[in-house]
Image 1 (cartoon, helix red, strand yellow):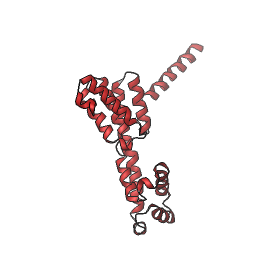
Image 2 (cartoon, helix red, strand yellow):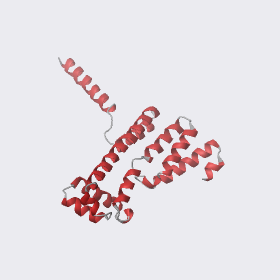
Image 3 (cartoon, rainbow, N blue to C red):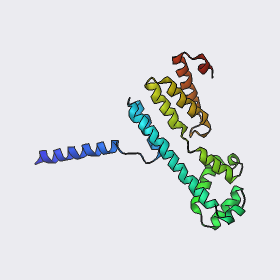
Image 4 (cartoon, rainbow, N blue to C red):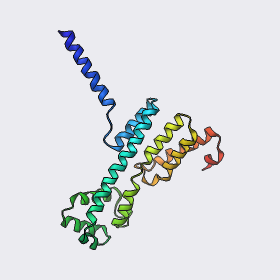
Length: 195
């Protein structure tokens, strides 16, 4: 009887571990974390898959935020408030548009009013830029470097570097530059190395 119970526990624990390892991540940062871990474990196929999932999840996350903000500012009273963030927040609070108010306040706490030049339009433009995920592109570049696909790796590194203004951690751009220089050295590409 003990052997049967131990066998059942073993089988159930195996299925639990297996199901956890094959679950699709729910957030972009979690998918990127899984991609990074996969590459660290010498599994470039999984790393690439999770990085692509991260990019798709990032698009969905920020498209939802864009939709919240756009639907909140469509009504005439909000448009009449103008483009000044504080004026828009006041009208949105009066209209009980708390999702939009929370989103605006979150962005203001992260970046500050000056970053958006106190303009709701600039805030919308910033959210649209965040549909891209340069960290995922950087990781995809690492995957292709691992696979020896230098031209594709360079393409993704440059794509990530071109979007360095929206990196979650701005100093990551120096890692990207370093890896581009390393790639140039491997390829003996003096022009790329000097960039």
